[in-house]
Length: 251
Image 1: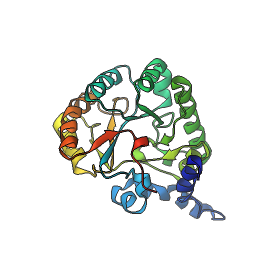
Image 2: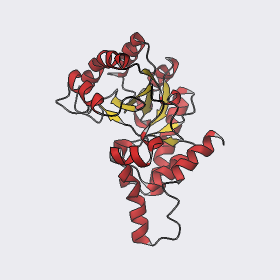
Image 3: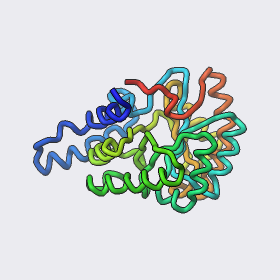
């Protein structure tokens, strides 16, 4: 089975029961995938969507960039650590800094799509969801010269329309199993490390942010400061760190 067919199969699994439903049921179907926003639900019933993969590997991901104020600092630290990660980029941010988006790709990091604008997919009609993801994909592809494989919706909120649209555009949706809660004003490097390690790390996918465009101002400093400490913790656990594409997601 081709990679595109695999992505479509996993995405359509969530929406394939909707044919012929009435308006009320259709609305329920639209929102039903949002249940996967609950970590234990997606890890149990949709492990691939959650980002579960090889048990000796952790997939490192960053959302909301590229941001001229912060992303270059992340590239520098990741280079020092010898890490490559997956950057889920917003189309509106890419258009502000297309050269920086290209720099992220040139540094060997995996490029992915976070949509065009940072709006919950539950607030978008199916056609609007498709248009938003398509705009984001177009901006990211044009700036980086890369055809992304992965999509992550803003806030991690899924809808039937966004899953269907992503699959139609050749993208597979992936969320996360651990996060640093690094968007908070009270976040520090130590709280970010604590919160990441509180989630599923071994064989999991970690969500962080390389921009504060939708977070507390300057919160990205806490994330940046956490990276060397996370490197020590992952090494102690015998975990290799890399992008989602090297994570060997479960079937």
